[in-house]
Every structure is written in C-alpha cells, then in structure tokens.
Length: 328
Image 1 (cartoon, helix red, strand yellow):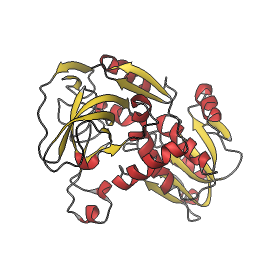
Image 2 (image 1 turned 90 degrees about the vertical axis):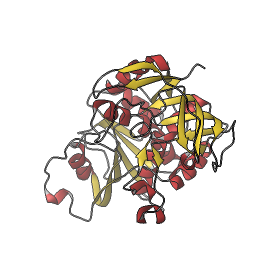
Image 3 (image 1 turned 120 degrees about the vertical axis):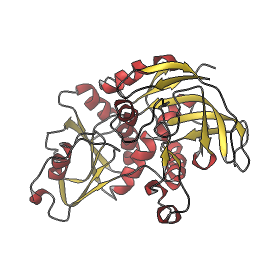
Image 4 (image 1 turned 180 degrees about the vertical axis):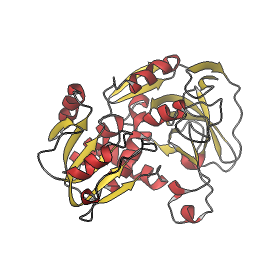
C-alpha cells in the first residue's frame, strides 16, 4: 500500500510503500477513499503531543470501504465506513463502563498511536467505525469524522446558548456554525485579525457578526467555543460571555493560558475542555448532519500532495477543510 509517513517530529511526510496485513479478530481492513487533514494532524507532525512513536502514518478523518473483516467484526466487505480520532478503548475501566470511553486512560488514537488515513489502506477496530450517509460523497464526508464530531461535542458542552461565539473559524467551526443555525442559535465568529476572507465565509454560513478575536461582539455571549489552539483566547472569551456563561476549549492541544483576573471568571462562568469523542457522539452527529443538512466545504489534494495540504492548513489558507482523495 502507499502511504505518507512521518519519520521524525517536525519533518516532512515521506512517500513510502508498506505491506498490507489481514485483519485480526475485531479488526477491519479498509481501502481509504478520502481523509481530511485536521489541525490535530499538525500537532502530531510537530511533536506537540506526547508519546509519539515514529514512523507513523497520520490522518483520522477517514472514509473508506471495508475489504475484509476479522472474526467477530460487525461489518462486512463492501460496507462504507468512517473512521475517527478515537480508535480503541479498553472497554473495562470505569470511564468505559460509564459510557465515557473518550476518557479511557488506555485509549489509542487513529493517526497518533495507530497508523491512520494518509494512506491507501488501514486497519481499524470495528467498534470505532461508523456508517456514512449516502447523501455525502467521500471527500465531503471526511471532515465530519473529526471537525464535525469534536465540533458537535463542543456544541453540546456549550449548553443551550442562544448567542454562541466561535473562536477560530476553520474546518470545525464551519460545520458547527451550520448546526447552530439549524438549532436557531445566533453565531458570532472570531477570526485572526484582518482575516476578511474567513469573516466573509462565516457570514455566508449565517453568522450574525464576524470580527477579530480581540473585538468586542455587539452582544454578550451565552457561550463560546474556542477551536484555535491559542491560550490567549481564553481570557478574551471569558470577557465576552455573560454571567453564567460557558467557555469550551475544543482542541486537544493549546498554548499556555495566560494569567487572568478572577473577576472575568466570577459570576458562575464555566471554563471547560472537550476530550476526544464517544461512539454516541458519532452516532448522533452522523444522523443529524444530513438533516441540517451540513454542507462541508473542501479543497481536494492527491495523497502525494499531503505536505502541500498540511502547509495550506498551517498557513490558514483554507476555507473549510483540506481532503486527501486516494487514487486506487
């Protein structure tokens, strides 16, 4: 199989050939059709996350076709499935037994501890594969598997906020904004200073207002979600939400949060993080997305162009999501 492999932290992805193996018990061999490029992939490539073993194949927003199933797997050859970030859990710890497998201490993650979707094929745990609605083609479905799922979990954590701020208007935000508007919420979009293109993109998706991260929105927010991995945004968001409001940090990695005065947290404001996803999140969101309907905006790249796609994401030169589309 062909793959784009990370051989050292901070290095470029290298085109390599890998041997295919047959799936073991509970595993699926999947032919990858498309894999979106996520900001978490940047953190993996840059070595921001601990415990990475190289060489590694990144990628965790995967749509593909089951080629073979190991004993005990619940999918059959020919099935179309999506594979997300959470790739394996123990199923036995207190977190798993309580339906919070996203917090499993032994969890393993696709494209981080498990070879991922920047390849023509992968092996995946059948428990963490999900059906994809036929209304989406492979490329447009791929961003739903992380930008959509983590965004949806973040939105749920924001509660029933009517006025919702979103900091960092990238792949996750452009999906969450559509769901929020479908639910009757007002969206206030915060972008990098001077990023008029992203602000106009947010307005096209129904945002009531769009401005720079340091701007004061025209109304107090009921909640805010921070997708940009920038700790400085936390005090800004706390200042923007009303008493009793919630600030949700939706990323797996963020730069250090600077000290801030207690008065901007006081008033029963809540600051919380979102960690990974659960199977229930995936089932609920993937059922909801076609009903909205969520329309993902994608820019397609060949597998061999993975470094270009990563570079475009790093530079903030994308509206929506970059997606690697495999040529078999």
